[in-house]
Image (tube, rainbow, N blue to C red; front, side, top):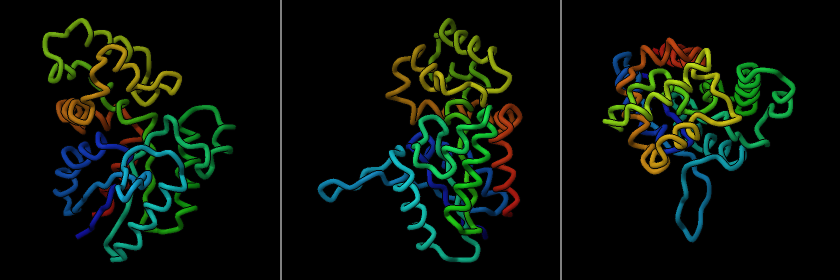
Amino acid sequence: MIRLHFLVEGSTEQTFVNEVLKPELSCLNIFSDACLVKTGRKRGKVHKGGITSYFKLKNDLRHWLKQDKHQEARFTTMVDFYALPNDFPGYDESRRQTGSKKRIDILEQQFRRDIGDSRFIPYIQQHEFEALLFTEPTQFVVAYPERELEIQQLVAVRSQFVSPEDINENRAPSKRIQAIFPDYAKFKPTVGPLVAMEIGLTKMRSANPHFDEWLKKLEQLA
């Protein structure tokens, strides 16, 4: 059985992997788990979540690669393109490209090359996790019942873009949600995955090509 280890940016992504992706992957005999990136240590306490530098992400990932050297072990990431650290491999080269997809392709290629392990499958979310929630904004009703007016504002945002993945870093998807539902910032580790479950993977994959490409790579591990 394939063991697939996810290294994720925050607790929202961790819950999404465990509650949404893990059950689907288990049907393919792929056992998965998710761990938060370690961002520092202070007075003996390890701090996790968020990526402040590529160096810390790389060290954490290499630690996991050394921890599980089994031939059936695989590793992937789920980190945001939005506010990606500028020490990321391929960062300067990617900035010369037009279009976020081309930039992300370069970053993922250079990321994999820098890690140098064939078991690693890099994934950078275009532009961040919350883009997936714009696949079907009406499903925010599960967290915000009787807030139809606000939900329709999210629908209006979605209508401005061909794909949720095109909602760009000029104003990140999460910031657009928080502008309408200010408490989302506090409750997103619960609300985000809950809305995602209501939308379902099928719809999210159909509306978000880069996300779908990643999941296809993971499914091919079976």
